[in-house]
Length: 207
Image 1 (cartoon, rainbow, N blue to C red):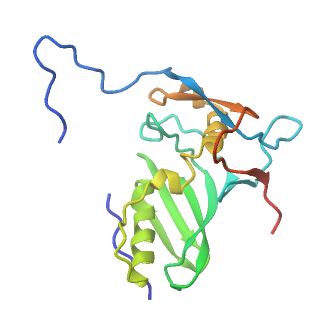
Image 2 (image 1 turned 60 degrees about the horizontal axis):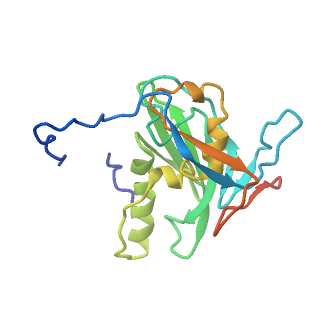
């Protein structure tokens, strides 16, 4: 049986006298001045992205719906309810294999729940209150069965695809995204000059 640990889930001192404290949070509607170039996104005649869509190592199954309640977004990320992607990662059962993991964002009532299920262990579903909490379980288990001493630290939002610029762009297009109070809007330009490495964006082939 695979080993699954439980998901886990000093500030600076005050400003010197006479100085003005910086606000802790950016308020709506904050927009970054920088623009990011991304590949063209395949779309239907109404301008909707063609799903499922391969974005680098991710396959976007559903973008979900923006939830206006507290905790369903931060300054950096939006957590749409119903969002679903698949991606490959090391198996937690077979030390010589990689498998497909299905990542979903669910409505947990007072905040999002992040669910991960693997193709080789579909009966074992990982659910945590943060994306990092959920993916940390997978990474620790994958390292454990391989006797790896590597760090178990992981960026859950990146493993969910939420930090990928094309996916961020598509989430920002969802109804209501422009009304989120704390999220810092980013500017993306489809088809702009792409310098260095970038993720390919193509429609996923039917299984």
